[in-house]
Length: 58
Image 1: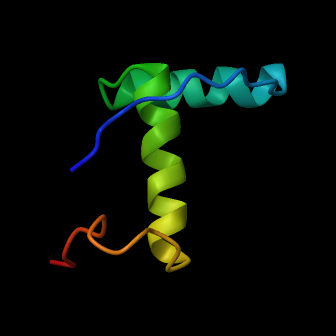
Image 2 (image 1 turned 180 degrees about the horizontal axis):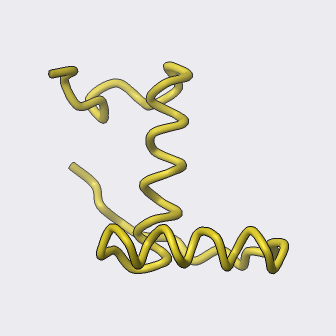
């Protein structure tokens, strides 16, 4: 599995950033990890993750 990270500057509304920060604090994740989690879940739900990157459904 290739876990290479790529830096990407993100411009985001301050209110959204604050809400995601609170969410990440609640779930004991870093802000970056929370953003990745939200994006990964959205991609999974849309069926857009590359093959081999999908976690099995419980």
